[in-house]
Image (tube, rainbow, N blue to C red; front, side, top):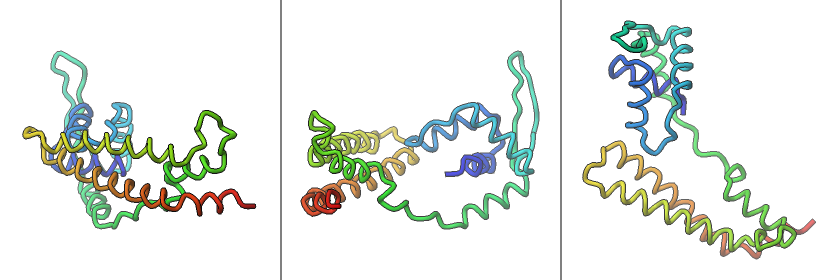
Length: 185
């Protein structure tokens, strides 16, 4: 996800200052990592430098100075271009932490001690963590006060967790063959 493009999208809906943009981001993307204020202001400075956003106004009403930004025509054009680009599918499984830990658990075997090299135990523990997270997300979806953004974000996460769970089931069925492949020279 491009933080700059997300901030441009928020500015396209209405001008805002850094604090406001951070708040709107965190509300609209409830399952995402909250933006840091420093990241917001650094990104805004870069957007202004690149001509994609501009200062709308600066005011100071008895408190710290607040600079309000708005998207420029160039920013709208960059946003349209970004929105028209298809996002690449998820990276290959070799980059996935769960897959990597499974292979390393097999490679390390008993050398790690305390059962840490037991791939089946690892998958059981990971499955339990996924199920716990799915229950938390289902509660978000069941909350009558949840925003549509929160519900859609929870749906997205649940779908990905479900895919991971199906992969883990397949992995358990193939552990013997995978162990031979991983441990053979």
